Image (cartoon, rainbow, N blue to C red; front, side, top):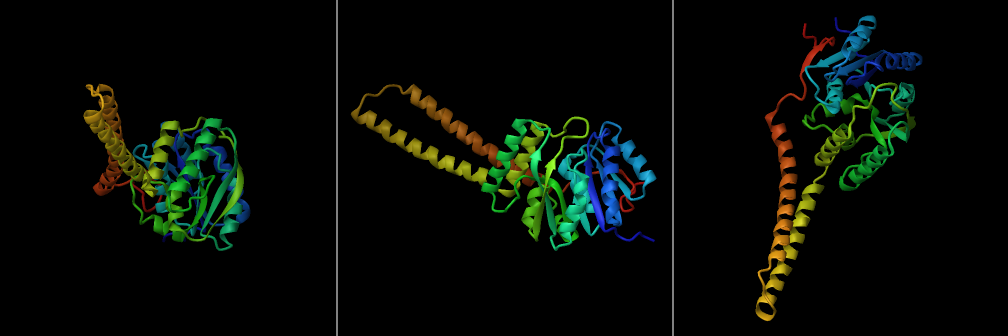
Length: 316
């Protein structure tokens, strides 16, 4: 007979976090203890190359509330969260990272807020310790830029650390985009939302896996998923270039009939380079959007499970 659904599910994406798994799991258990809730912790191993999977399996053998999903390869942070959300059974679900920067000690506050009638409870960062000034500034600028170009209100200074109600989870299951931006998707869904403030700590151990190249891809996914702003920019550039070209035509005709004419190599050279650059920019932006449409049309699975101890995913 299937076990009853738990009150709370915790979804944690894992990529090479062998140094942090045991202490993080202890902190989560200690945070859950006073709540007395039936719960499950779902670790999603996103193609780790270290001993993370073995540690997770060891934890699950000693605690039946610990579940895991092991991907066939690395599919990315947002996809790992998505897999956990799709198979979480709790009436409320908490999303948090596996590096200890999202403090498990905040779980009781998130849960208490949800009992007040909020379907989404964000963990809002007051401070970000252990991060470079460049990362802090670029993150701050990006989230404010994204807020200005989208027509949805994505809360500022929040990451994926949050609690969502099961009704939000059900809607997310019907949003099968290949390029996930869950912060935007949850904001787009709506429902009653509030926040709990906290100071984000440094990683417990190891180095960050969120490199600047991954940050750029993440930012691109966020912008392209929830805004047509780049396409509008390309259109505005097209109008601007057309206006400049018209002025150059008028100037050329004036010089031909009333002024002094030469070969005009400089103006021609500048015009060609300028027009070519704008056209390439526009084509690149269109290609980015069309590429995303193409990947969604292929209808490939967003992830592939290699192994799991979840009943609905058990591959043995």
